[in-house]
Amino acid sequence: EAAVTQSPRNKVAVTGGKVTLSCNQTNNHNNMYWYRQDTGHGLRLIHYSYGAGSTEKGDIPDGYKASRPSQENFSLILELATPSQTSVYFCASGDWAYAEQLFGPGTRLTVL
Amino acid sequence: QQKVQQSPESLIVPEGGMASLNCTSSDRNVDYFWWYRQHSGKSPKMLMSIFSNGEKEEGRFTVHLNKASLHTSLHIRDSQPSDSALYLCAASMDSGYNKLTFGKGTVLLVSP
Image (tube, rainbow over all chains, first blue to last red; front, side, top):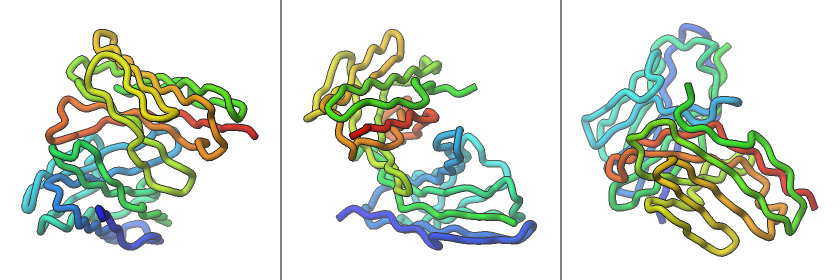
């Protein structure tokens, strides 16, 4: 069964700290995506990847880095977390053949 | 400026009624549209996709697409309380890399 998992599910961080959000997919999809969801903004694309070793900037990449060390794993890194990065973060995977993005359960991040 | 506009922002329909949601892209490069549904506290899940002019029906759900105006609409007949959710429209330039731009969504409440 197609699956996307995220860890942690909840995270409280301090301003200026480093935060790493992890995503794993067992769908063998080439593409993976990181979004954030805020009330009044819908889903906004932060970074995405076409395959292991590749990362691309999405629509709101500032303050975020991404890493795709393998087909299955895609991480989102906040080097210096700020309160404005408090949000719910979703990872998704997809492929040209699939044409549908499958979303993980989300990570709720609070930066104090 | 949001490239994918959805209306209305919220909608209340009685159980058994018809819900109609709208979505328009201001980016003339888009070719593909998706509708995702997100129940409260859950992740988005694809409901329907439409890539060609015309209409597509799946059970109680019907989507229309007018490529000339880049407008798509989702219609839910015989609405059920379980249809209460956030409905997100997404647009993409191609189904390959599948880089989606989401609208802010329409909150649908089906009252028993």
